[in-house]
Amino acid sequence: MTKTATGEADLADQGLGYAVNGPYYDVIFPEPVRASLSDALRLLVPGARTVADIGPGTGVFTETLLALVGREGEIFAVEPTRIMRAALVTRLSRMPAAADTVTVLPEDALEAEVDVPLDAVVLFNVIMHFSPEQRARLWRKWADALSPGGLLVMESQHPQTATAIPPSVVPGGRLGRHRYDTVARADVVGEDLIRWVMTYRTWRGDDLIREEAAEFDCHVVSDEVLAAELTAVGLERHPAAPEGIQAWRRAQTR
Ligand SMILES: C[S@@+](CC[C@H](N)C(=O)[O-])C[C@H]1O[C@@H](n2cnc3c(N)ncnc32)[C@H](O)[C@@H]1O
Image (cartoon, rainbow, N blue to C red):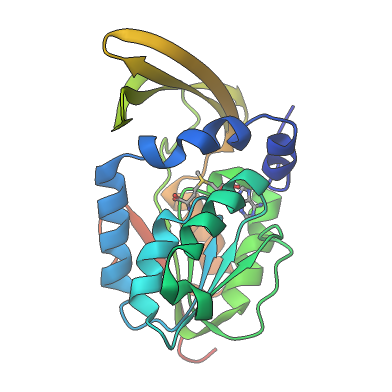
């Protein structure tokens, strides 16, 4: 079965995908990735006032954006998956600045509507969920939502071609007596489609006390394909994007 953009929210409602991943998300998120993507936001959108965070998950980067936009700013957090939205709203509810600033939209990114021009649209760790046909609509919709000079920001995808990725262990954090990690591997399941199999492990000392696996079918998008697609909707590459970051700008006039 090929899962689609809207599919991940539905699959989670069936206990699959993010329903398995959600309870582990923050404790297994690799700290170097969190730091480098947050640094990229600080570099690229320091003066942003209006931002959409597409697929914010538990809000790891919504929190960074909240500090950047300040009290006068506005953030739209577009998160269709119930379990991730629960974590997001819990995080935001404990941040006083979010009350006046962050609107959580439960719709899919292809359906959500915002009624102000956006200085930035952030799509971290989400574009693999969109098929080529869906990406065309995604780019058109959010490029049109940008203010002149506004930015679309995402990370370069890994892998860049549809190739199998052998299993590797990604260390996570600890909570009390337990330590967490993830075994990640990918298989090729179609043209430009890979299936990530993520096994979330809980350890007590040297004892493995729990493991749960989630599968995600992910569309492979090379930097080259991305450039062609984003150029086709009138965006231009930001000259100062750090390595590994794709930042594309709406022209001042078009
Ligand atoms: C890997 S998580 C990334 C979360 C966050 N951006 C981060 O980097 O920590 C992907 C998120 O995208 C969301 N998502 C999946 N399909 C989506 C869609 N069509 N529209 C908006 N969000 C979607 C999922 O529910 C999930 O929360």
